[in-house]
Image (tube, rainbow, N blue to C red; front, side, top):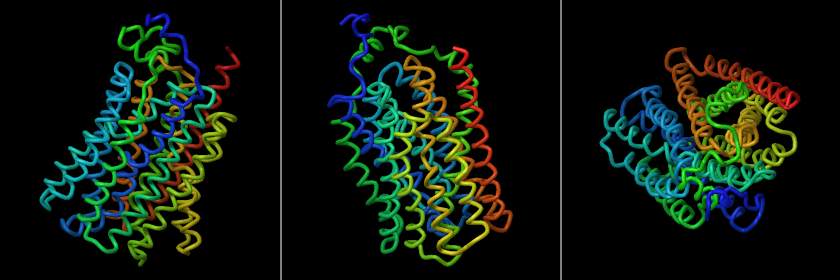
Length: 415
């Protein structure tokens, strides 16, 4: 096949292969790095801190170190995806992720060993993030990309819900190492077959990559895309959403157990975030295709601020469950909106690199959020100051996504 022939766009938004890729992304993301580590690690914060005799901030640094490495490495992954495609990366990640998770239970109970383990997990987090699976979807979908992303991200939301509940149930009857080991095995049993059978790059784009004819792929070059003010107002808004939700995912369980809740009961509340996210993302993907990223962000991004203020001002069971639901409505929505925005604003030519850079920036929120809450608890006498800061960050994300939408609309009007 010549590069010219390969450049002709195949039928998008349908067909067995396209929907198989979307379904594969749904299942694969249910056991990807987010549900397997980010969403679940908060339940292990207290038992690991107790075993090591360290503060929650110290143990939170394990999480943050992993997140820092993932954030710094994701842009490089984007270059790899644009040049080589996603299938090989996804297969490698499906094998490496459960293997490296097992390190956490095998290392000696010392802070140095846990930090070294965190470095290993951080390296794997680069390829086991949603980036590779998500990069497949714009190859196969255009007009219905929002629906395809929603299908994939429903898997991530369900994985968050199911894995947190499973971890909580196991921790109620087993020591933390046994519980973690069982769940690592689950990640392997589901993730590896799905990667082998359902991850597929679009053939014509594969040919263009191999023949170094990527300039013929539709879309803007990387440099021009990175100079867009839409990119640098929307991506920081997504970063702030990630900061808030990551902070709450990590510290909501400790916050509730400090108030006398059992671990299993607290896990049930944390799982509400994933459950509501599951329902919300099923709707948000369809809404993206209809109303765009701006209006959707304006409607959703302020909700975590209300949730944090509820946790700050009211400790009733109803308020806590409502707060978790409001945070859940925003949890992961940035992961839906980012690929949609990049595909629709800048095309496919530099999509992998743009997504890698953008998602790397967004991931930094998962570094700072838990640290904000940990420092609030350890040095300011509780979680009150942290919750106040998170509510302000949520409000700022609303202002930034509204600005990005206005810039985008003005650019479209001006041609």
